[in-house]
Length: 277
Image (cartoon, rainbow, N blue to C red):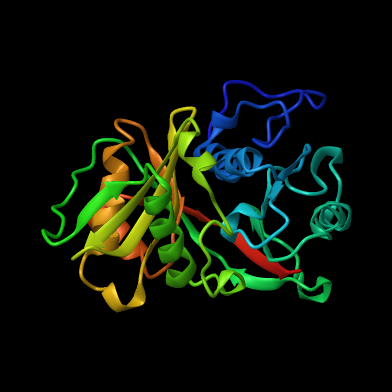
């Protein structure tokens, strides 16, 4: 890699994770802050708590809430004078110590083994990015996709998410125990449900901020998988993003569809942990 000139030993060399750096400095940084914001704005609208520091952004509803109870690392612990791993994790755990339900931690950086602290490894989901302009395939004719605009649609959306992933700390499903209509009026957020013969079978959430589309919570109920419904929901979300890039953490099961049919490119693997309060 070439450089125009030698840098002096005292000159600051950008790492890409300084607190005051533009979130769009790189795609990984852009997605990291987009992922955090996709949880923060609904949690604030629902009256939850938010923690924002130089190294972590965390949100909490104090009750089971899927990935809305999540901390996202926004700076490598211990880098350039930042708090180290022990201090960063202590801050996160103190923030979540009260309340119920599972909590998630997402890191674009490798993490230590957190099992001794009571965390459970969720895995290393790949970050995939889709540049604008890639072709979009056809969708199954028997699937009707509707945007969520009212309580009934929001109930269907939540039921598919809770039973489809599943999120066991929210089972058995109870309407309004997680979300309510306040999330339907947030700038940049759009939710969709797909129906087959009037039955809600798939859903997806997309969040657009600062020119980047972030895919959130796309899932199909187990009995309806393998019929192209997840792919159709992906297309519907891409349709409403327009000419912006789109990024998402996807499972290794979903990744081949996104790459082969939608032009997504693998960038890096995140690390995900889960803590049950």
